[in-house]
Length: 189
Image 1: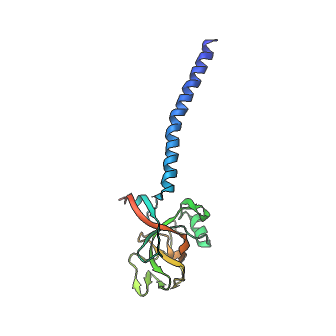
Image 2: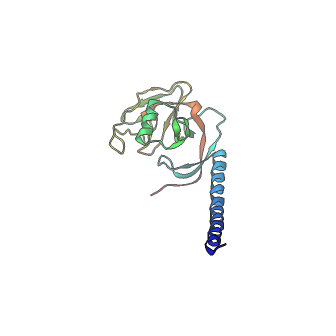
Image 3: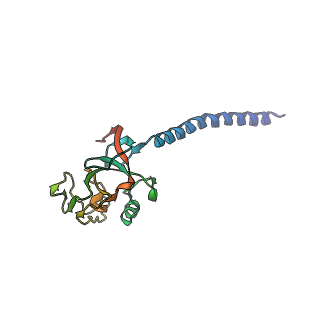
């Protein structure tokens, strides 16, 4: 055996150790992510709610006004356009989008009036002014006013640039994943 052959074999053993050393943390990270997702934990990277780690708490009752929810948006033309415009992140919901974190401001039977801002049953919703254009200058069309139909909820976020029911309308309650609970979050300055 030549010195070169031994060096190649030694290099191969060294490479195997390096691969094993890198594989263990990679496998651990994958297991951590799978466990977190299976346990209902999600990371929010959108400004609609504080950034950070959130948990989905199962909801064993109908959604109510002021519930902060995780919800899979329906596969509609408005959501496909929102995805194309970059408003929605990639995720496990239908259409390949991430769940939304929004607050319920109206439930079935309530009247939602959409003008310069949003009113529910005649009461103005704070921080609900409508934008005519998004951050890229693209036009935004408000959803028509009306009564929230049975089996639907109307969602809102007080974040000024939020894409919510003001623009896409009420969403079907079966898309609700659960209540949104902050675990470890922060609001960037």
